[in-house]
Length: 254
Image (cartoon, rainbow, N blue to C red):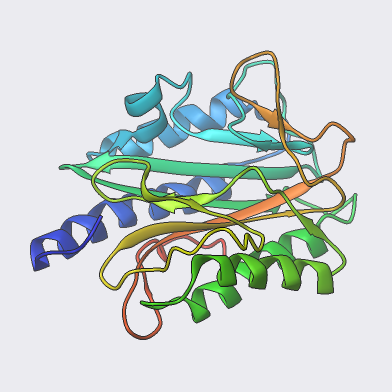
């Protein structure tokens, strides 16, 4: 989406605040012993109270209000009454929604309770790498160069990136052009970020795997080798300087 009026900015700010607030409150609500279905229902109630509609449900018929992925699940985890959260789990919540014709996407990984399995360095790397990448994005910058930055920073931290999950344009629908904002350097990608455009930038930082595989449920993506992945995502407006981070209402940076 390209911003054409102040009304666009206001509309994007409203939906971004809704998804950011929902993500923040879901994270605070999550407790060991709770099912991911319980956590998702809470998220659905929050979105409804804010007047927003679940984007994955609205756009794709996803069987949940939000995506909740645990441990070696990378993305698109289906909330389930059979999936009980445990102390030390690596949890990812991805909240995307629509409000009055505008869409926003926000996600973050965190360790639930005590870091029993030493996941925190991975979470910290994913969060910091996204912060670094966002600080370099402005109109005219090559998308491939940001992907290369993310991959290089992951390597410095001792991790890898998932190469088949990408950021994307957003604003008037959930997925727009540019259709791919990868976490790695793709020399064939000559597209550039455009001033006043709206994109969702994501970091998928992995302990070992570089590919996520779809399971038989048709949605959930996992690593086949059991390695772990931390994801962080913000919706932004690109400017001539540092971008406007629309989804800063959440506490995933903390």
